[in-house]
Image (cartoon, rainbow, N blue to C red):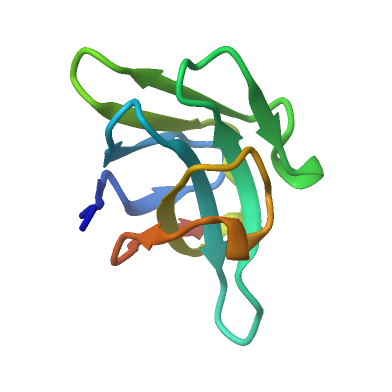
Amino acid sequence: QVQLLESGGGLVQAGGSLRLSCAASSTYVVGWFRQAPGNQREFVSAISGSGRMTRYADPVKGRFTISRDNAKSIVYLQMTGLKPEDTAVYYCAAGELWNIAEGAYRYWGQGTQVTVSS
């Protein structure tokens, strides 16, 4: 059983930055997803086990950066230029396949709240 633990969420003003962290083994592809109130959970970003491949959802391209430190087994999501519409619970997920679909990820964290005030 793989346990994922997110951290780094919080309250920030529009235009600010936050860095989310997820403890995850280099064995897995790691994705970040988010769910805003009343919305379905959506893909944000993913990184391959080696870190050589990354992918971003269009709304966050150019503002968010995913990276990983496999020596520490941590995946990061650096979020800059935050907007109120980025407000959501952010989830870290791990799986074996390179895919952006939720169903490809077997393991999920509990989520961390990100709130962006205007």
